[in-house]
Image (cartoon, rainbow over all chains, first blue to last red; front, side):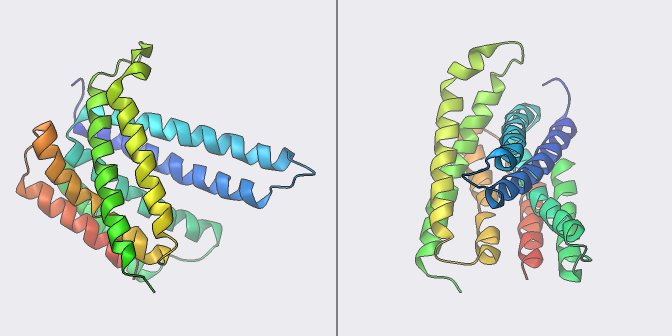
Length: 114
Length: 113
């Protein structure tokens, strides 16, 4: 391997961030779907699918950098992104249990990274 | 809140998805950014196929339970991956990995409370 596991972890974190954004675009595109005016739908579905593909590509590339059993659970960061993005988009503060859960997940990830 | 058959579909789906991840790992080892041979890579095709099938099980499961329950259930994949990666990829199961995975699953469950 060229670099170490930490590079792989960084790539997966980016990948999970992108896939969360992709899901938002895709969901928005579904809401905007109108047979009479497809432009808004296309405007959101194209970036959504593109981000999805880039995210998947990054995920596969990241696997080169370390054990699958170490890198795969880092996908759990998607749970963190979803929680953070939901609170940002809906201007709600993050619930205490969510923050707690995020802390536990990050602890687990740090352990795997060492 | 959740129908019992969901545990079965999640169980099957996550195992299939985990095998898919193993194939993707094998595919990544042969990855060379400058070469398009990756597309003909059998492991990549099997990996994507299995991942797609597991997604179908996931979508079916959503019919039988709330997302807030199913989302954490899917994290059982991390346990499958520990086991499968040992037998198919010769990755060691270390105490750190076990505790790390347990913490991540715990964190996911806590987040869904």
